[in-house]
Amino acid sequence: MPQLKLFNTLSREKEAFQPLDPAHVRVYACGPTVYNYAHIGNARMAVVFDLLANLLRGLYPKVTYVSNITDVDDKIIAAANETGEAIEAITEKYGRIYNEDMSALGVSPPDIQPRATEHITDMIALIEKLIEKDHAYEGEGHVLFNVPSFPAYGGLSGRSRDDQIAGARVEVAPYKKDPADFVLWKPSEDDQPGWDSPWGRGRPGWHVECSAMAEKHLGLPFDIHGGGADLKFPHHENEIAQSCCAHGAEDDLSAFAKTWVHNGFVTVQGEKMSKSLGNITLVHDLIDNFPGEALRLTLLSAHYRQPLDWSVEGIERNKNILDRFYARLNQMNDMEANEEDIPATIMDALCDDLNTPQAMAELSALLKSDNTPELKGQLLAAGKLLGILQQDPNAWLGFGGEGDTEIDALLAERTQARTDKNFARSDEIRDELAARGIEIEDTPTGTKWKRTG
Ligand SMILES: [Zn+2]
Image (cartoon, rainbow, N blue to C red; front, side, top):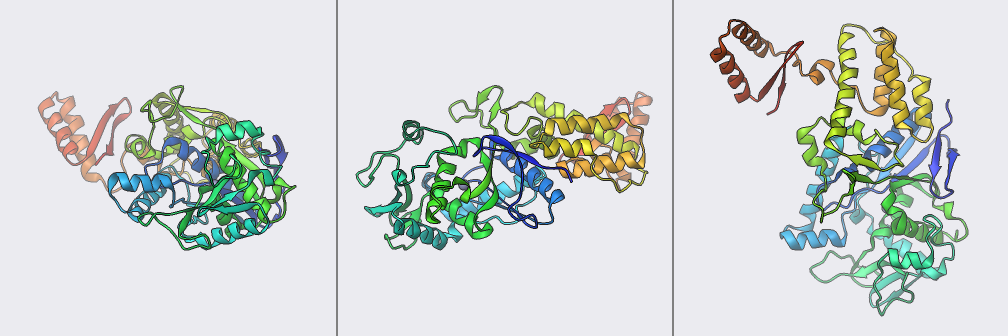
């Protein structure tokens, strides 16, 4: 079995991954706050950790991958006030759409997808522990984590105290003992979602949600905690503070999670995605225009820790790569695939800190071989791990599917009409097909068609 190596943000080193319990590997990744459509940056996290979970499943007998849904947050309350929709309606809708969109990218649902609002009692219990241990205090209905009570704070991101305060854009508030202190619990107005607590009716802060849900579903410590690089500070720093301090592990930052894995940013044509630039690229829009599999491969085309620059050219490039693989699979359509292991070159690349560009280069190198049941088996096995190449090659290439003899007959008639230079009839057939949601394309190898409606 190849040795998996992962870059651990906590140690700042690429380490040989040693599970705490080789019989059961436990992974948590911070999921979305559901108040609008997921953008391509959210999708990168989902695809990277889906691949990591797939890889771990190939290496270890049991993997539990938890990724949460944040369904109570001030951004959701703001969205409800803006649109007039009920909070539950917003979170139900965007939670469902998130899962549908990720599924279009070939992301399997996490083994457990906990929702914050279903874990409020766990959060309250965690906050009570922190108060008991003098790491948190109450003030004006708020409960705050006292950052100076945890001298190791900042060890994940390596930020100095001044950077921490500046980076968190902290508000000065009369109930705060220290400007760096962060909210564990805050009071709710009557028209805001709230739960009864020892500190009055209120709601949790965002950071405490993940600490409580990860512990509940995985136990502490667990193996891998992941998320986007933008979460390192303050979110992950605060998760570590809460979880380590609640369990008397103030000197051991790895008492929460052993290995911290962070994926890099997605830029759009060199610019950071932002509302003001109007370049926020939503998965929901992309899947109307491109196959999900091409989007997935584009997201995996850069090493996960590197920035990924998103462009239509990049998607086209990766779609062309998939076309080449599917064309070969299509040539082998009538061939029974051998049961093959994933080629060692590809496993080694993925086990080397998820080196997907190298893995794709190795996969492409396989195409130098002749068409054989071995090659077909290798392409399918490696493709399965990467989340690609599992579709019917005919359908991917747009040659139509089974049971479409009527369309095939019309296309044959159209080809004949064109040969006869009966362009009126040929156009008529094209229009008839278009009306039925069938788009056709003439290529040197014949007429392809696909359903668009
Ligand atoms: Zn989190």
